[in-house]
Amino acid sequence: DMARILDTSVIVDGRIKDLMANHFLTGNFVVPELAPDELQKIADSSDSKRRARGRRGLDMLEQIRDATPRLVIMDKDYPETK
Image (cartoon, rainbow, N blue to C red; front, side, top):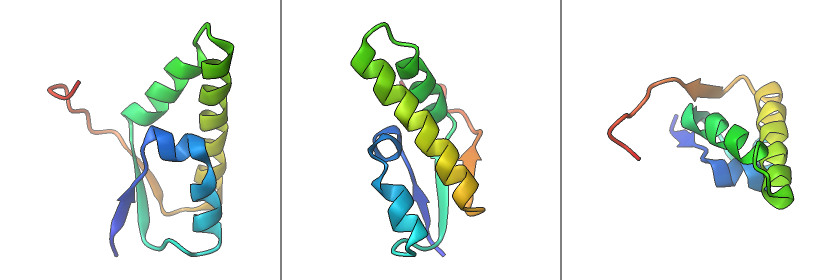
């Protein structure tokens, strides 16, 4: 099966959860470790809109994590990537 990589924008958008739940997307799902870190930074923002977006993303990631055992948060770091 093909693995699908979920980035921050896909997680915040939230539609991915329904696509996974209704089996429109199959296979495994990978979230790079930097995505939850980025969501946390957004959630800690002083701007209320960014903060709400970050919190929504963190909540959505938790819901996706609870909904499927096919989700892996990859802990590999790529220090050369900015």
